[in-house]
Image (cartoon, rainbow, N blue to C red):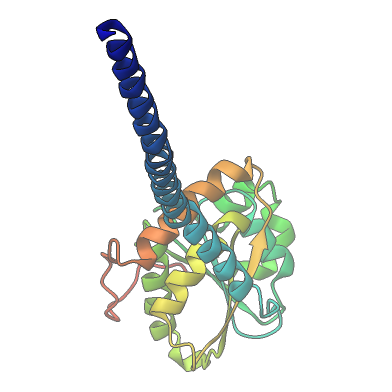
Length: 235
């Protein structure tokens, strides 16, 4: 009799514990489910902030920069040095009365040097040489914008109202951001002429995307003096 009762109690306790485990199972599932979605949400926010937002910003800047067609009839053409093809593109499209300013050149890099660098015969473009000036102070894109302001100040008598900026396609969004930040948008009509890059664009675009994001949120500042002191440029 006692044995039967003990067996009954054991069965009852097993049933109770089984019911307890059954009750706790849904709460365990819910806990794991909640933890999964928290992790998923963190990853999603991280991807948005780390990739989505910079990519969106990069694309929006490119669209804005290329909204106006390049002006190769009037105004100033500005070449940002740094990659092959930019100077050649400028000379090949330069209007008969336009001035060309090359910002970010190194001392000794003159008209003939850049022609040879881009595979051009300097003699074929000799008529353009007197309308090309070189700035040698800028070392960054931010510096290019500041040096352009300085050059415009020295050329106020020309009454320049439009600027056509020439740089590589991958570099356009960041160059646009710097130029818009530095120049008076109401005074100057700014347009960009993207030059196709010879290098694999994906790696360069990723680099430019994060540089643009860094500058857009206040990273780094220009280090160039924009006062209108005599600038060592060619005629």
